[in-house]
Image (cartoon, one colour):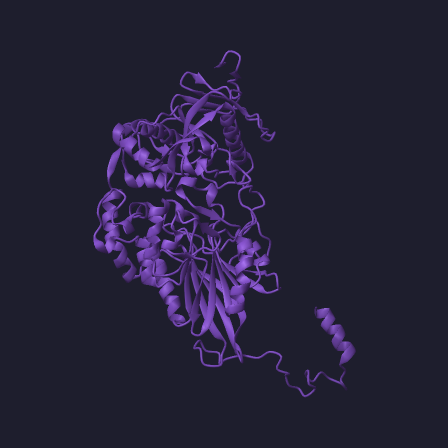
Length: 608
């Protein structure tokens, strides 16, 4: 560039004909102008600033939210009449408080205790009401507790959004109500907010948990609705829960994500996203510059800039976006977009108003969390249950079968993984048992996964176990690839007395013939036998098809052969099991074998 300027100057200007500015008079021609007087106070005639504050995937975490609220109020005070506050879903599930008070809107806690009138509302909804949110879009975890708990979202004093969902009337979306979009009047500027929810809920939840609901393609629905919203308003925000960017290494993350939405849906100016828990400071490792970090700008279908933001999860960041509107003879025109984020620090003070709202909930929850359920004389470990047998996954499998037996439900064996990657009771030893409390179980199993029993034959079991081997293979040998979240749920374990044997053929990739055998008790499953059926328990999350247990969205588990959809949460089953046992000593027992040396011999019907 310097060379070009030098060459142009030498060829154009001389001592006798020096450069005198664009108009030849030594002055400027006004191609760059400044609107305003340079201070931080908006005055009539200047560019009108609108602030968007946002966060996503709170999953409860109200103690952290009390700090986030401080940042929200500080930022809102800078532009009090023109600030929009949004949350992008996955709020009412995720920690012990959200579980214990899931039915608060129905008048009672999870253990059946009737609540005081002032606590008969979900605590996070009560806090959001107090903070004056402008809208919330639904996340996939909003559906975890079923339609009765979902109905308590009607206590929100702000719009609940999702455009790409339909209901036959059986679920009750209209009761909340859930609406496609809303319009916020910001000091005379009309800003439409379009809610776009997760379209993959049907492989996260069993049909029994979402009766009457269907979920549409988010981008196609965006194309149908955004242009009309843009024509009738001054700007359009898509409030989404579909994830930030495509994952080229994943078979479970499709292209219905924010970056593609921005590039293909006309009329959208801003996307406030969630679901992928994208860290704004480190961004997405799959995107090249300049789209790597958040907030970012993607070129829309009309060559217009679309600003995208997301704020990680657990109330750890406040996302900020700033829109500038220029007054015109016909109204206003959006002429600038910018964004930033602010981390919630350990030193960030809690907001006293929010802390006061939370405290009575915390007081009741403390007694529940501190409930002693028993002891363990060994640490309970599920950190690597996605590639190996662990004592934590074994404990969970045994507790699941025990619970079903206690309830009179016949089950031959259990197949599922642990709920999350964790290590609890780390100090436990035979001479120094660790006292287990309910709060330990929430650390190990934060998600609401319920037990379901299916009738399955040999070929069906082989299909499931082959996919489990694929999960194991990619977890172990191809980091960053495989098509599912890195949670230990995705590798299958079996209860006591059972054994699953795989032939690990690495470096050869899975070929559909890596499962060698399956035994429970003295019974050996013949994978060729389609006439013999077994009662197999698992968790609803896997049975619906999550963790890659699906082909093109169709679960591999035979949902038409469900014999018991129990709604018994695995976490509660483990709690009750430990209470009944009083002391547990879960161990690694050789339930999972990967060397293939123990071979299934179908002729003699036994392991050799």
